Length: 597
Image (cartoon, rainbow, N blue to C red):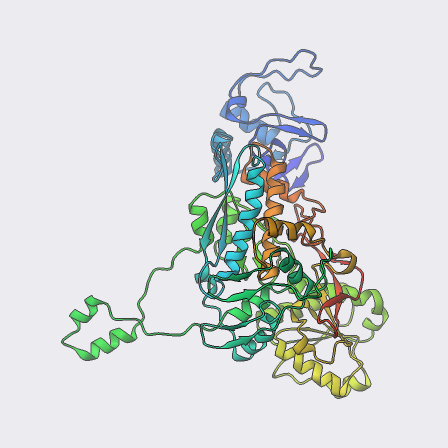
C-alpha cells in the first residue's frame, strides 16, 4: 500500500506499482510532465551529479540498501532531499521490504520470457485434434497468417513474431451434450457447411447451403472445396446471385453453437489389462476381473496454458476456453496476458486479471436487457416485476442473479424467477396482466417451449434472450415477440469486412467456422497493436499496460475495442436484434446501447 504526501491519499498496490511510473523495465519515463528517474541497479548504484542548467539540485550519492528503503518508505533520496509528492510513501513489513529490494536488484537485468533479440514468442492453447480440432486449426491458421504479414513487413522493432500452439483437446473432449441439445445443434451447424457430416457418434447432421452474407463474402474470396482435418468436405462456392457487400449482415455469434454441434458424449471403453497385471493375476481369475474393472489412474497432464508458460511464451492469444481455469492463477502470478481468448461463454474478469476478452458474457447481457427496458418502460418496471426464465444450472443462476442485481440497483420490483422444465409458467395470469418482459437464458428447447406457450396463451408478452439462441427452427413464427441481445454490431455498427476478405484470399484461407476465424483475427490484431505500442523494450508488464491503454481500436471484424485498468472486456454494450423471417438473419432493432457499470 502507498500514500501520496502530504495529504497521505491512500493508493492500492495496483495503482501504486513501481512500473506504473518508472516503466516495466525500470528505466524511467516522463509522467504528466514530471521526470521519473531510472531505478535499475546500474542507475541506483551510481552517484548522480548536478546537471548543467538544472534548477533543483538533484545530485546524490549512490544508494545503499538503507537509503533506498528510506526513499521508498519516507520519500527522501540518498542525499536527504525530499522526493516529489508524486512519489508514493509505501507501508511495508519486513518480508515485503526484502522482496522489494530483491526485485530492484535484478530489475531490467533479464528479458521476460518469450523475448529474444530476434523473436517475440507467443502461445495459443487450442484443440488441434478431436471433435473441436477443425475449429482450433482454423483459428491457429488465422493467427499465423496475421503474424506472417507483420513479419513480412520487418516484424515489430526488428523482432519476428513466433506462434507456438499447444493442443488443448483434452480440456474440451470431456464436454458432452444431451440428446436434445445434439438434435438442436443439427440446425445450428446447418448454416456453416452445405453437406452431410457423420459425427464420431454416428449421428448425421444435415447441412443445407449457407445463407449468411459473411460466408458468401469469404466464399467469393476463395471459391474452392476444402477438406478439413476431420475429412469433412466444406463446399464454399457462393450462390449464383451472391454479391460482395462491405457490411456484415446480422448473424448470431456461433462459438457456442459450433462447439455444441460438434461435441458429442465420448464413448466409454474399459481400460485394457496391462501385461504386468495379467501375469500376476493369471492364477486368480476373480482378481483379473477386479483389475479390469478398476480404472487405471494416470497423473493429470498440465493443461495447454501451463505447458505454454513452461515453454516460456511472452503472452497468449486466441486460446479457446469455456470459463475460468486453474492455470489462470499462474497467468496472474507471472503477469502473462491472455489476449482475446475464443470464449465459448463470453467474458468477464477481475480488474487486474491477465485475461482480456472481446465480448461480454451472458450475465452482462442480462444487465443490458434491464437497462434497455429501463429506458423505455421505467414507470412500468416500478409497478410490475420482470420475469426471469431459465433452464437451471450455474449459467441459469448467473443470468437470474444479474437481473436481480440490476433491478435492485435501479430500485425496481424484484423479478419473478421460473426454472424450466419443472417450473410452471403462469401464462393464464400473464394473459390478463402481462409482465413488462420475460428475460430468458438456457437451452434452445426451453426457449421453444416458452415461445409456444406464450403464442397460445399470452401473445402480447415480450421476450429478450442472448443472440446465441437466435435459431430460426426454435423461434418459428414468434419472430415478432422476441428480441435478441447482440454485442457484435449490426446496421451502422456492423464491422467492415473488405480487409478481412482480402486477408483470407491473400493467404489462401478457406471460409470455415466464421465466429472462430473472426475471433482469432481480432485477437491477433489487438496483440500486434499492443506490442507495437510497447516499443523495443517489451515486457509482460509493458504489454499489459498498452492493452489497458487501448481505446476504440478497430479490429476489422468487430465494433471498436476499448480496455482499461479496470476494464477487461473490450466491447461493453450491444443492440437489440430481431430475426428476419425471410432471410433468417439478425437485423438491428435498436441503436447501440452502452453497458453502464
